[in-house]
Length: 452
Image (cartoon, rainbow, N blue to C red):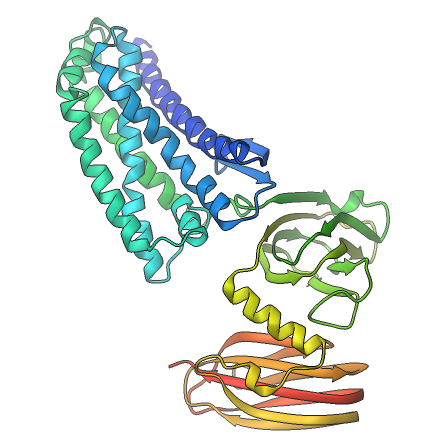
């Protein structure tokens, strides 16, 4: 029984140190939000049963979000730098042990950030990782970040050995009465070593296990969650918001549903979307569960909007969780915004879209009334990217693409699809299918890029 008690004692110390590091890490994120004038919505440090994270609102610029992302790493490291010169002076062995384990944990947390930026260069970007979020929101090159963390890790290790006198601290802990009393476990000198090793690799193991299960909503400004059987009507507004200046919105969602479900954004200021004459754009329409859904890079102009859920009955034993992120337009966003504005204002011409590799394969002006046409296209690669624009007025409108691997709707009563990538078959022949009703001076532009 005594042996079991001592083992539990050592395990609890390790768990406490991990919890301490997690608390300080998430506090770094939270402090960065608060100091920049944002509001922290959630603060979760439960590393045993969930992915620790915070959520916040009020910060929309890339620079502010980059600072929030990196602060989770910087705050524990700052404490590490301050703590090390005093660590050998701590008399209480238990506190000294906790300080050593925390310091090693901070060093261990630096190591993944050496490799993650390199993976990002090759197109592997684990979702939810702070350093990946920092790269996405900053203009710093991933390779430079990797080199900075290599240098920081090496300097910090030397700092721990030379300034922290870690060898003497290690000896003090091993020779303390507290550990001498654990001789019956026959792990006297190995206890601290094993625990130090565990604390060194825990950040690596934890991150590896959570590459795919990282919190989907960690970077969201607003999180909405509702149980479907609690909705008071078949059509319910779950969020109303106002856009003061043109911004880009990303919607991520998790849906569990027993029946057909529709989720859409309504413009409360009239037909206010760049993409369609209608007063709504659909985010989700189906009856299948979705664990990680994305509806991203949606440009919304100034006006009032709401998010609605529509279902057939109120007997749906499912739930919906939404994360909403908004940001200012980037240089690329302004390019697309300009194109969409010209389409909406009916001033678009084919020369406005000059993306590298895209070729105009179809251009038809002044389509009137009901119209149907099929446009064959030869494919010489196994992947293509398609951009389609419709300029004019119509009552019903559909452009789809059929190929060996399947069929996809490109435009359905909407104006533009930009850069949609599809897996196809080399030397296959696909076809675009155009169908309109009550069109008025409608112009259609189809661009195709073959990806080698």
